[in-house]
Amino acid sequence: MNSLQTKDLNYIWHPCSQMKDYEDFPPIVIDRGKGVFLYDVDGNKYLDAVSSWWVNLFGHSNKRINKAIASQLEKLEHVIFVNFSHEPAIELSERIVGMTPEGLNKVFFADNGSSAVEAALKLSFQYFQQTGKLKKTKFAAITDSYHGETTGALSVNNIDLYSKIYKPILLNTFKVEGPDCFRCKYSLNRDICNAECFEHMEETIKEHHEEIAGVIIEPMVQGAAGMKIYSPIYLKKLRKLCDDYDVHLIADEIAVGFGRTGKMFACEHAGISPDIMCLSKGLTAGYLPLALMLTTDEIYKAFYDEYTSLKAFLHSHSYTGNPIGCAVANETLNIFEDEKVLEKNMVKSRFLKEKAVELLLDHPNVGEFRQLGMIAAVELVKNKETRETFDWKKRVGYKIYRIALKHGVLLRPLGNVIYFMPPYVISEEEIDLMISVARKSINEYFET
Image 1 (cartoon, helix red, strand yellow):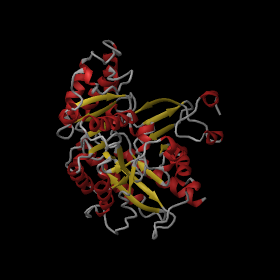
Image 2 (image 1 turned 90 degrees about the horizontal axis):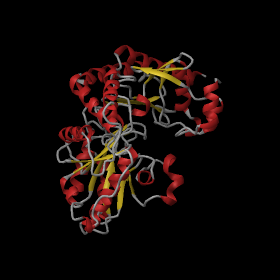
Image 3 (image 1 turned 135 degrees about the vertical axis):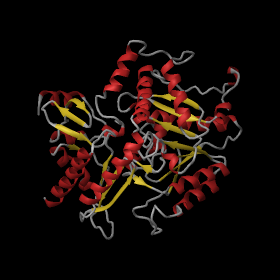
Image 4 (image 1 turned 120 degrees about the vertical axis):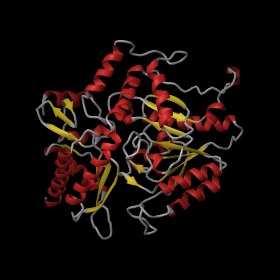
C-alpha cells in the first residue's frame, strides 16, 4: 500500500462501499485520465468501461470541454440564481427544450440526479395540492427501480440493498411488479411482446389513482437493477394510463439520456412525452455536477400566481444553474452536433454486440447478453437452462471486477451482471480489448 492509499483510508469514507473490503483491496489512486483510459500513480492504466459511473461521454480530459471551462472561468464562476441569470443557463435551457420530447417547455435546475428526482416528486405533489386533488399524495414505482439516494428518491427505489434499512423514514409508495424480460413469467420476448406485464401497473393505477400523484420510471433500461431492458410498449401503455387517470408520468432519464440508448432520450423509443423529465450524468459529459428537471406549461401554470398565494415552488440549491456547469453542458451538446455522435454510436454499438456475441454468449455461465445502444450487459447464472442465479453473498460480479482490474479494464458490476457503458469516444480496438478482458476475467473466476 502506498502513502496516498494509507492517507485515503485514514480519512475518506468511500461511497457505495463496505470499507472493510479496502483492507485487502485498497483504493486505486488515479493520477490522470485521457480518452477512455485512467492512469494510476503507479503507472498502471485502466479502460473505463463504465464511464466513471455512467457520466463520461467523450473521454477523460477532453480538449473541447477543457477549453469551454477555461473560457467560462474568465467570465463568471457562479452567481445566485434568484432574480439573476446568465447566458450559459439561458442557452442551455433553450437548447434542451428544443431537443427533449414535445411539451417539456420549462427547465428547473438542480445539482445532481437525486436532487432532480427530489424536485420532481415535490413538484408533482405540490401541483395536485394546488389544483384541488388533495388526496394525491403518493407515488408509484416498479420493482427493481432506482432513482437516487436522498430520502424522497430512496422512497421510490425498489432495490432493498439501498433502501430497506431506511424504510421507517421513507415515504409510503406503491411498489408495482414491473418487467423482468430475462425471466419473463409470460414466456415472451421483449422484442415482440405486447408488454403483458403491464397488467400489474394497470391494476394499481385503476385501484389507487385517487391517491397517486405520479409514476416514476427509468425509460427502457433499469440501470442499477442490472441494465434490465424492457419493451417500449410498456412506456406507451403507461403514458395512456397516466393520461386516463390524471397521474403524472415522471421519466428518470438521468442514466439513459444523452444518447446512451441509441436515441438522444430513451422516451423517444416509445414516442412519448412525460409530464416531468429528470436529466443529469451525461449532461456535463462527466465533468461537473449539474441536473435539470423539465416540465410542462400546465404544471408550471399551477405555481404562477401572486406571491401572497404561497404557490411558488420554493425548492433551491446554493449552486443552482452554475455557469461553469452550464458552459460544459452547452459544449456537450455542441459535440453531439458537430461530431455526429449518435450516428457514430450506431456503428460502435453494432461492433460491441458482434464482439460480445462472439466472445461471451457461449460461456456456460452467461445467461443473457442484452443491449440497447451504448448500454450492454451480461447476466451471469449458475445454471444456463434454468437461469438460476448465484447467491449474492458469493459476490461473483465483484470478484470478476477485481480480476479485470489486474488486466487493465474497469468493469464495476451490478450484482451478478457485468455491463459495458463506455465513453462514446471508444474505438473498435478498445471495444475488442474491453470484451476480451471480460471473457478472460470470467474464465479465470470460474476456473479457480
